[in-house]
Length: 131
Image (cartoon, rainbow, N blue to C red; front, side, top):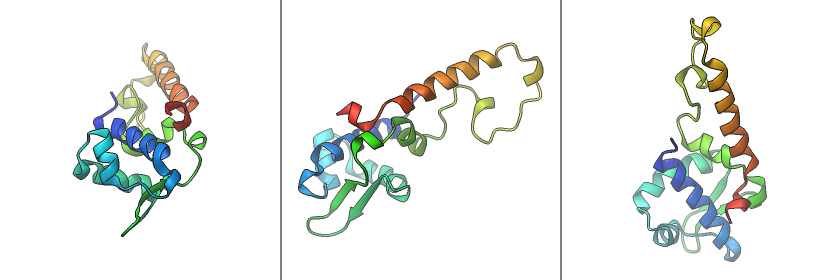
């Protein structure tokens, strides 16, 4: 399940993309338009800036803007920054130890297929698709 953190990150990115034609988009404006807590949004922004998805400027006329065009942002990349894990089961999580039951696991193929389907879908959609 995608957390509020991931869902809000997508809303923030879509809002910035829709409103950055005049320069930087103040986060207080995003919070107001989206009906979200500014305090919570301030916790979502750091991974997006640290990973080069958005860039921010402080002071008058400051705010945030995308570093690329909306068509160049895959939804999967945004969610992977904000979610702890997208894998449907723990044994497929990034960095998980190899399960000792894997050789005889009757369900691993199913879970791998689901994992691939989810990630393929998320990577086939862009921020532009949300706009």
